[in-house]
Length: 195
Ligand SMILES: CC(C)(COP(=O)(O)OP(=O)(O)OC[C@H]1O[C@@H](n2cnc3c(N)ncnc32)[C@H](O)[C@@H]1OP(=O)(O)O)[C@@H](O)C(=O)NCCC(=O)NCCS
Image (cartoon, rainbow, N blue to C red):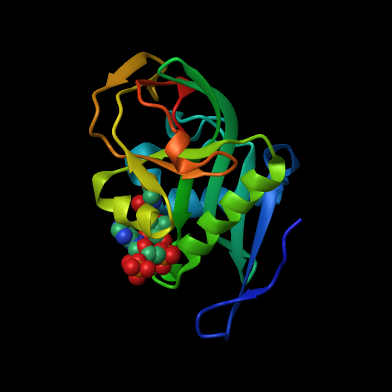
């Protein structure tokens, strides 16, 4: 589905990027992904769970970067119909965006985000990519072509309870099959957990 063996910026070390359906993850894929996530988050959030990562929604597809057999980067996304104002919109909800400490600053995050958008496009019938993030990382996503929106958001929290976030928290969208200008005004209801 995707080309393998892309070269690093310095053209010395190959980093392969694959798109893997959640149901096709092997035990060894899961082990390597767990190593990537646990190195970053285990101390604060405990062990990574592929079926409910840190209480967020799971992914349908995993964009996985590998170097020397280890996973060094990941972006996940899942298809969902959400509500925005009076409209129903099919989004690819993005989460689990992580590049290992040793591979940061080499455009790998950007490449993973591009590949995620391509795989949403290939999957078909997805209007927008959608994600929420921390304020300090917004500029990474805007560099990747995502646009910030200002809207209230209803979702299910990591603990499984309904939660309302007032407008202003970082929410970003990426046009996939719909033009950016067609994103409706109104409150967002994720109809589930964030990714
Ligand atoms: C955010 C992250 C995925 C970026 O990966 P990366 O491979 O280092 O990023 P890239 O090299 O592709 O950077 C692309 C652009 O984003 C910018 N950028 C990179 N990391 C950034 C960050 N943490 N905050 C803001 N901007 C960032 C870069 O400066 C670059 O901008 P430029 O084109 O103007 O030079 C990586 O730093 C990471 O895994 N951080 C920890 C986990 C995390 O915060 N994930 C996001 C959760 S919402």
